[in-house]
Length: 176
Image (tube, rainbow, N blue to C red; front, side, top):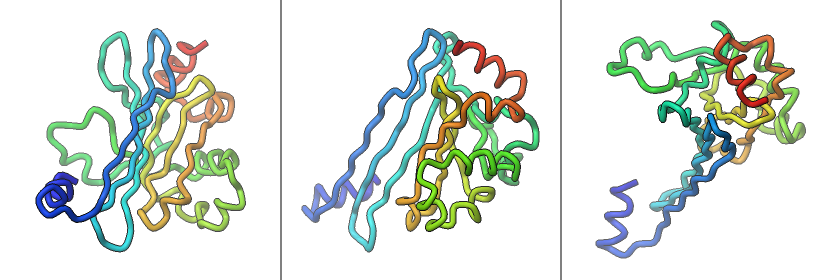
């Protein structure tokens, strides 16, 4: 993005870069943030993104929502073992079939999910996870040609309970 902005300043060609960071949860223990935006530097299509972060307000560290789930509920990238240093949170490559079914049942606009082919991609697309009082919120990281299909899907604590690790149950309990 810096290259795009740099070119715009020197040559004056059109483009834009906008982003918004906003809290989605504030408690004495947790701070949940949504970071979203769009940019355009020329070409056929602009770029859009939505990502989430959760911070532990006691330690000040970014939480790893992947740790809130039992082994096998989420899938991870093969390259992850080679990363050094390890990231603060594990990049999520996909969802297990049982978790994907629960998530698809909560998809906000069912017709749009069918039209976009979400059910075919749900287990094999990247995900980011945030936190709301009602439960963890999942956002798919679809390719940019499918960005219009992106939804924030909150899984109620009751629905996600079978997939929670001890740490995930502790997070849930801290919100009561």
